[in-house]
Length: 285
Image (cartoon, rainbow, N blue to C red; front, side):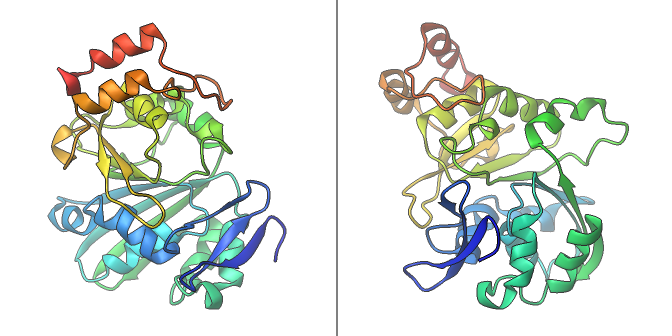
């Protein structure tokens, strides 16, 4: 046990972290490595897209936490020649420090302890990962506030090809799931650079929020405790199973579909104005 974070064991024997303040486990289904591989690495075709990339391939890792998602991506891409930039975001370094102290129990950080220590110390590290050249940055920021001003930065970050979105749940951390956050995220992308985002939630509220932010949205693969997850993209060609008219009809009847405009979690049906905007989305035309 260390401050806000505790080491806990899942039903399958894997160890993960539990946040006391949020009351939630990180990677609660299959455990950190298996869940990260299914949800983020495979679902976003990170290996295939990296291998086909012309130049540097960029991952935005939103919700660094204990670095399970980023480290799983690093293990999966070791044998791919190329250049990878990971840009991680979190508002605390506590879970990363906890991970480093408990690398043996958690297992997934093993072999990358020196990299994690450098990231924790200087928030930036460059290294060779097998055949891959890696630049890894850690932005210790309030992500919604940072994102609202990203276009005004003197040195804006590299535009992503994929986004791992792994914040605590909307009920516990609503500030990370509002319509303004995802609208700002969509505006930060380059329309000429196809980008896909995935996250563990399948909620109607989240999917409506992503659609109204400008994304195309699809059904994601099952992982652990989730029968479905969610994939969004600025290019519909990146979606294997886009949401269809049947989903829209269910959303119009849902009692929890209206996006959050403020960082307060509320369950509400779609307002008439929001429903009209959803109907007009190009995905359903």
